Amino acid sequence: MKLAVVGSINIDQTVVAERIPLKGETLPGSSLHYIPGGKGANQAVAMAKLGAQVEMFGCVGDDDNGRQMVANLVKNGVETSHIKVAEGVPTGIAIITVGDNDNTIIVVKGANGLVDRAYVDSVKDALLSYDMVVLQHEIPLDTVHYVVELCAEHGIPTVLNPAPAAEVPMDIFEKVTYLTPNEHEAVLIFGKARSTEELLKAYPEKLIITQGSRGVSTALKSGEVLNVPVRKANVVDTTGAGDTLNGAFCVRISQGDDIESALKYANTTASLSTEKFGAQSGMPTAAEVEKAMEGAK
Ligand code: RIB
Image (cartoon, rainbow, N blue to C red):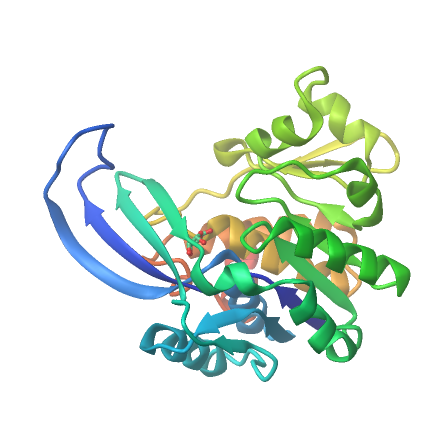
């Protein structure tokens, strides 16, 4: 199975401190790092590290950051031949603080803002040759919705991870195969009237809600609510854990796993990724995930 990601490519400028600062507070940092990130690129790398065939569609600036971020994707085995290099606009940057098992992130979208309908049209034939298309909310929402509609017309399954939080119109939700919000994103999309359980039961095996330390949940078609609890980890950095979960879920569901097995696998993969610093450097290989799952039996 071949997977495509249409999404963001960032360089993460990450400062490590004892804890994340409070509003208006200045803290000493212990180190500063420039490392690969972007929710789209992170999910593509998570998939490639697990052995999947994956292509990244997106846009970088014609600058050193862009060249480094594309080289990093290539190094990780991600196909990059349709990534657009735009002049006069910088590669996306995320300013991240990490401390005490927590983080803050501000993204300056840069070239990610140029992933528009015209770009999608220019790569359409290649994109439609994939078996599954994966999206997030770090490129223009209009493009996300356009790709979902295009894939639905062509019978290609889509996974939409609606992060950062933004509304998902109901006609778009109906067309995606899986929607994977966290609890806050779910409230923004569906409102507060229904509990998490009610929401999951309304959209079995389609809506998957991540709940931080309470794990990840979906409803099965039988009506039973499935909760996969968080695996214990020696957490160093949670940045990119959600991306790892999404990437791993896509790999396994596209390989024919049932949703319960795919979520268990994704949950273990995400938890392993938190044990090392950086969004991508802790993402495990398939062998490492299998070892951890065996050890947990
Ligand atoms: O999900 C983590 C990612 O969010 C970081 O890598 C950063 O680039 C932001 O996009």
